[in-house]
Length: 139
Image 1 (cartoon, rainbow, N blue to C red):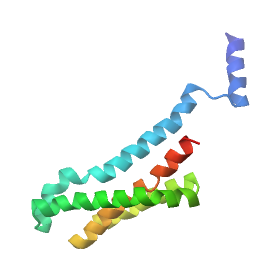
Image 2 (cartoon, one colour; image 1 turned 30 degrees about the vertical axis):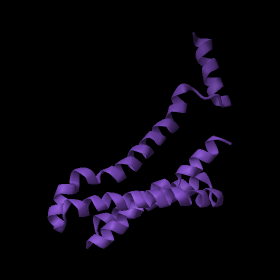
Image 3 (cartoon, rainbow, N blue to C red; image 1 turned 90 degrees about the horizontal axis):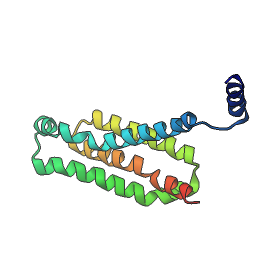
């Protein structure tokens, strides 16, 4: 028993990874996905109060989701350019910073136009890293 414990310590010191150490990046990716998805979907339960506060109709509030989708489409289409010109780490940092900035713009939007632009940014920022992840996983 004592020798197997000593051997496992030596194995981890050499660089062999255990199941637990492999779960850390998986948890990190799950948290990133959760925050990414939440930033795009959090608007749904808040829509009735947003309609009342801004005095807009259901169709105008549905347009907010359209602007998020347009931003997401633009992010997916431009992600190839970003993927070819940056590293994976920089793309993730830019995406996280972009989502944070876009959510800040949405939170403090003084009018509907700024809110729509911010929601386009909320859609654009996470989509801009999708191709980079896909490209690296298939190489």
